[in-house]
Image (cartoon, rainbow, N blue to C red; front, side, top):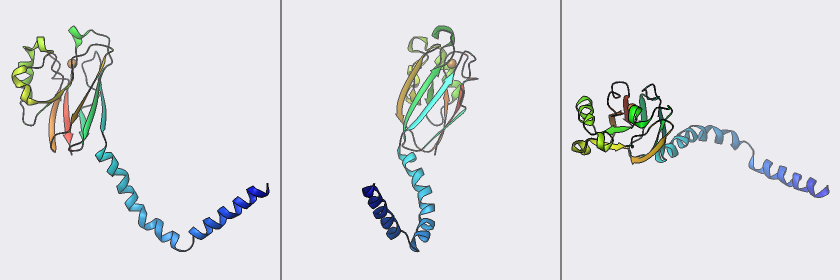
Length: 169
Ligand SMILES: [Cu+2]
């Protein structure tokens, strides 16, 4: 009991020593800096994104935002039940300026490569494999230069509904 009291007394003395008039100004000065520094680690860390689509042929995200150069960990979840042959989904991120309609047209003829058109490989920044109901797949890639990019699911007939903007800030 005596020991505890002593420690308590020592602790309060330390606390008193640290405190004082300067304490108030210190908090005021560090407050704005602290807000900035909480954002900094986010920018350098990974961008962890989960995008889902079910049997309703819709992505749950129409917009994805990341930072330039950021490592992107993207998970595609098929929350439906339909098999891959009738309701397959993928996620394809197109390079800047690629014609979405023309790309999707070529994808129709690429059934053997999961609707990834080989002749347009250089127009793809990243893509997942094609998955069916209940499946999940993950990819990792580096965010491209600042700009707005299109993403889509290239399964026949899906891209009109299943597309969105991938924004790099
Ligand atoms: Cu799809």
